[in-house]
Image 1 (spheres, rainbow, N blue to C red):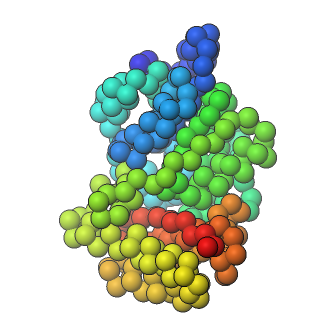
Image 2 (image 1 turned 135 degrees about the vertical axis):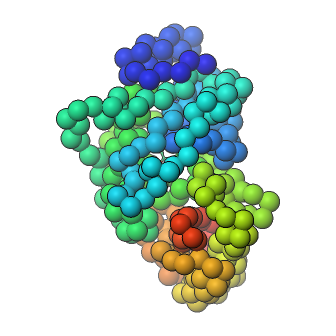
Length: 281
Ligand code: PAF
């Protein structure tokens, strides 16, 4: 596996891969790889001959009071894991390579990026859309793999690819979970032992809300009950618990199409997000 930090060098290496034929898959990450990321890599390997993984902790998607400084960085360990998986390239630019002096372009996806995390984290999805556009232009992959855990991010990227004719197939991978249901996330590492126990309430409350809605229960009541459970478990701040259209992310108050129940809440200093599918019977 080659580790590359310079765009011109990356282009040459991808050109070489393309000469041997087959599809090129990109797995964009911010590193601190866990089993959730490795499921993305496994899917990339199933779908493409050449797998490129990017690791870039993107400052543009962190708000001023968020965890950019403390976000886990473990490139040496990540690199070993990716090498073992047979990845072709680790694309690991630094901030100056990604955003050179004078950088002044921002990609903004209206609609799907508003509300939910877009409301709780202003500017976050502009940062994601901008860096993903750059990663796609740098690597020019045939396909790119994203986890469903960041469901709004997935919807934003799908819209971005359609709107800008980026010609990259977007492949979603279901959320990977711990045995007690907690979605895998690099940010789980911030949880204290006590918070980690309480954190399992987030997927449980969402599961109960999804089941109640699926059975024909009132949407508002099911969401309110989930919110209470999450608060009672010790989450200090619940940003949202909502039912949204699975594609457009528009609010849904009656289950008449595929939907998603989504939540974001803070426990201690850690903000967790999760979501589950709900479909009409
Ligand atoms: O999901 C992530 O890790 C990031 O948001 C992404 C897609 C790599 C963009 O920085």
